[in-house]
Image 1 (cartoon, rainbow, N blue to C red):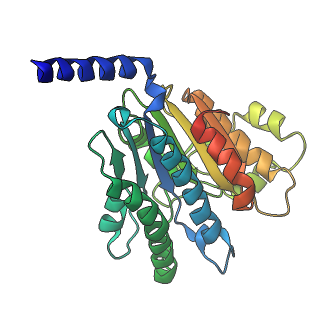
Image 2: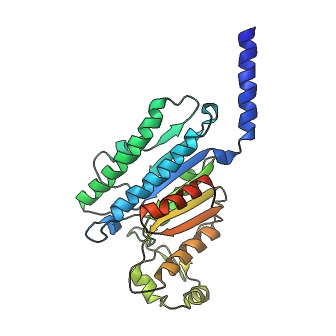
Image 3: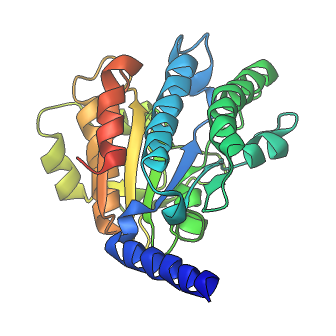
Length: 280
């Protein structure tokens, strides 16, 4: 009889606490990694290491969130995506180990493993992609078209997509133009549109420049873009890139987003932490 009462008490307590916890307390974090030639150390020295530190900062914020919850309330997960899949050894195994989930059945080993996997595996992925040298590019536009809703949005969770990219969007399999809208932007395409003056916003508005969008309602998705790295020569390039991305996200009704230019990881870590904690 006592055991039955104790079980009922535990269930009642768990139910009460679960109801008191809003869905946003359950984190579902997804990474989308741009492994194009932007990570080539000959082309962009230091970008690879910055990416790895950004990933680590997100992982630390996620781990702190999980450790701050009661075991009975754990319902959090994190995973990594690529599009297309890089042609490097053991990519399936490496990415599978980066898919982590926490529940009331989580063991102490799981807490140790997440730190190890998110230290070792991203470094292996980047190193092997660089060693391979045949950068297949990153099709971010098509990932949004085909996968973002299914892969990155989980009911009863606070869904966050972290995109590591330089802000340019291009893949040979997704080169489309519809009026002023396109599926890509490159330094060359922006220069051809004469978006290199203080009046870039007016030019974009007049010509309806922007990314080809989709009739999606991503009201349950927050997006953090890290590593925007405008090419030198155009003082407005960063603003133009952010305008393209910001307009795209707004059209798809993204709940919240932030677009951060590449910087020292130590400078961005508190910003990343605040975003994951919901303080931004």
